[in-house]
Image 1 (cartoon, rainbow, N blue to C red):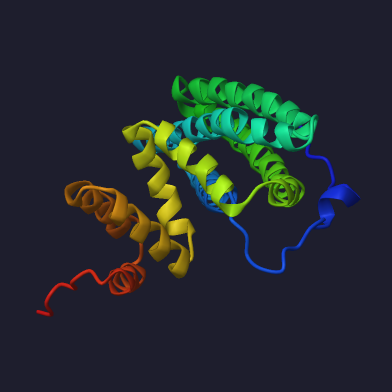
Image 2: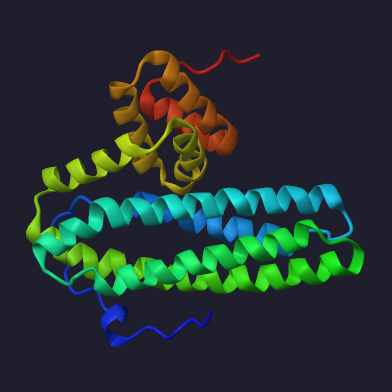
Length: 244
């Protein structure tokens, strides 16, 4: 896997709206960046002599790769057809990169299996090889997401209204099974800034039964620093616990 330098096309933002537009990519890409970098650094810090720690790191990687595969499927199924309707051929480059990413994910799973079945010095070597492969995968994805957020968004904003873009995102969200959605939220909630987080959870509160939304708040409490969770409670108007 080789990361190519950014071309002039991808170093510039071809379209800057005068007012904020609905961004299909912003939230999920923030979540992916957070989960990718955390998984990478966790894997790099894993003690190869500690079997339980190594297993936990490999399990974390497995969850990240599951999310990456889900994201590829969602973009291929819902976003790329919209791009093709706007401009035939517009998704070709990124679609080809998606095929490459699927191959890279399969390679990473193979390397993870090797690490899982290794012991002693062999485990250390396998984890090091996996770490370097994951680093290249993350680097490739960072550039890939930049192209989507600039080149693709420019086309989407020119061709569709915010309501139409929101409908595409809603279709994606509706297609995600509940267990996968919980995994997504573990990356989504801490990756967003405070206003984005409050806005997303306010919308979820309006659309969910109270008991389901309580589960979302539980994920927020587990994944956020105490100060950030308190800010979220304040922004949502959720009662704060009484001071001791």
